Length: 371
Image 1 (spheres, rainbow, N blue to C red):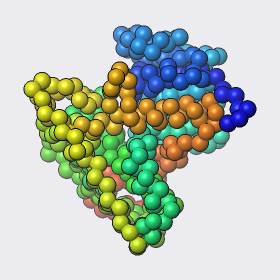
Image 2: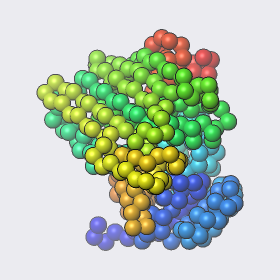
Image 3: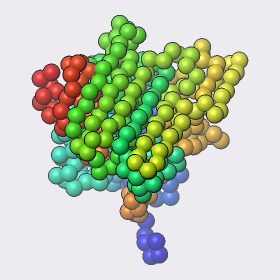
C-alpha cells in the first residue's frame, strides 16, 4: 500500500430501494467517495434516500445519471427484472459496476449482458452478499485447500418466510420470470457452487409444488432438485419460500452439508441460536408483518441495523467493492460469468420441474424460450 494513492470515486446508485439505501449509507462513510448521484423512479423515495445519504444529484433517469461526468463507478440496485437497461447504459460508458443479483431474470438477457461486459473488458461483479459472511468464507477455504479431500456430494435446504415471495410476486409483471430458485435459492446455490469451484455441471433434474402461491400469484412454492457434474459429483438442493408468515426466520433459514473423500463439513445457518420473542412487532425482515412476534434473529441476508448503521455482510461487501474501485484490491465478489451460470442453473432446474424430465447443460436461452 506504500505510495498508493486512492482513486476518488463518483458513485452512481441506480435504484433507491432498500438495497440502494443500505449501500448508499455505507458509501457515505468511505473516504474515497466524493460524489453520489441517485436515479429513482419514485420521487418521494428518491427525496428521502437523497436526504439520508446526502446525495449530490437526484434524477428519475438512470441514463441522465450515468451521463454525468462525475460518475466513475455504478451500483445497479433496481428491481431484479429491471437490470438490463441500466447495466447496458453503464457498459456504453465503460463504467465498472456492482450489480444486484441476479444479473437478469431472463436467461437471454443475462447472456447478452455477460457478452457485452466481457467484450468491453469491464470490472463488473454481482451482489452475492453471503460470500462475505465468515462461515461461508471458512467453508470455501476448507474446500479450496483440500481439507475434505475431493468433494463428491453437497446438500442444501432453504426455508423462507412467504413474505419474501409475496413481495417479489407483487413487484413483477410476469410471475413466470421469477421463482424461489431464481430470486432467493440462487444465494445457497452460489455458495455451494463456490465450494465446488472447478467442477462442470452437466445435467439437472427437479420437481416443484405450487399449492400456496400458485392460486394467489401464479407462483411456485418450492423446488427440489439435483445437479450432476462431469466427474460424478452430485449437488442435491431444495428451497421453499412458502413458509407461513409466522415462521420464526424473518427471511432465510439454511442448512448445508459438504461431503468429501476424506472429510465432511456441515453448516447450520438456520439462525436458531438467537431467538427473539416479544409482545410488540419488531419490524424484522424485508416486509415486516404485525402478526410476527417470534424471530430467529440474523436471518435477514443483508445484516442487522445496530447503532444507526447496517452491520454485516452487505456493509462489508459494499466497503470491499469500494476499496476495489479506489485501490484495486481484489475481492471475493461473484463475477458476471458466475452470476450468469447461477441463473442458467436455476432456470434449468425450473425448466426440468416444468417438463418433468432431466435437462442437459449448458442450457441454451433459445431452448428455454421454446419451452
